[in-house]
Image 1 (cartoon, rainbow, N blue to C red):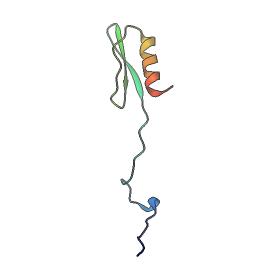
Image 2: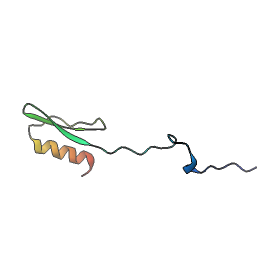
Image 3: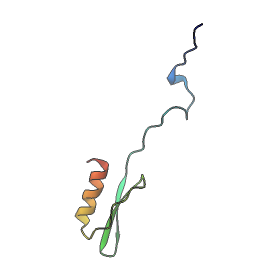
Image 4: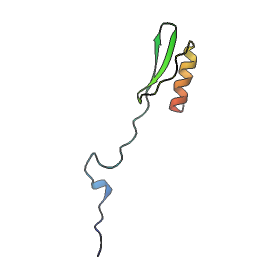
Length: 63
């Protein structure tokens, strides 16, 4: 008995594994502190140095 095989390209949309969305980071400032935030929900600790916040964001995205 032979099992039926299906073509993965023929699957309806919304099935299978979805690609991971790209990480989009931004720097938020509140008073004398800045914080790196990402679209995935990640955020870095508040920093007094904007440069350090930018480095936190770059490390998170792998740049």
